[in-house]
Image 1: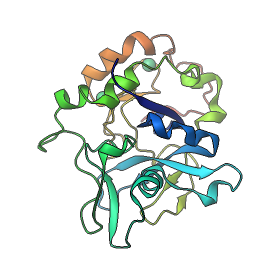
Image 2: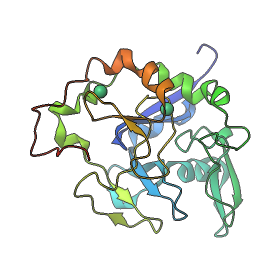
Image 3: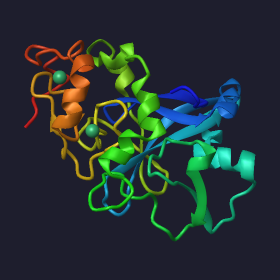
Length: 236
Ligand SMILES: [Zn+2]
Ligand SMILES: [Zn+2]
């Protein structure tokens, strides 16, 4: 990581894992003024969901907020015309380094396919060499990973394509992102990813990520049997 100057902010728990956003080191001072959280936006075209960083001024409250990528664009590059929007060049919607942001006509589709399924430029190899992947791998395990003991912190806010809050009563319409921390693959269909058979709490995009995550996850993975049966009804 030497040679890179990058800031990382914790967005909290969402989509089954702890999410972080990347930004330029120069922008890290924003934490003095802003609070950050993760926003899951369900894709109106049925392509699952995307996770964004939401920023709001601490003294003005959550409703004063905006997307971190738009905030950063306005700070550095000026206003965003109504027919334009800021997108993430590499498809990683929490990689808010200025060089990863660009302005495109609003009519263009939201983000590129980040799954590497038939799309060029986002293969697994490219992703693993991305600064985001490298940076997130360096982060020590979040103690709150052990959600078994902190169920109240697992609350997730979901927003529909109009930015309206969708009430969550259970996890039946939660799109999971791959639990391996640097992986940004997110389900395109509910329950698409396979669940850890032992704890039945975390989901992975495939065996590769599950294996990579095991040294960390095994510290938190507990046999599901007998744990809070009323709160967590058995899967299928
Ligand atoms: Zn994965
Ligand atoms: Zn497990």
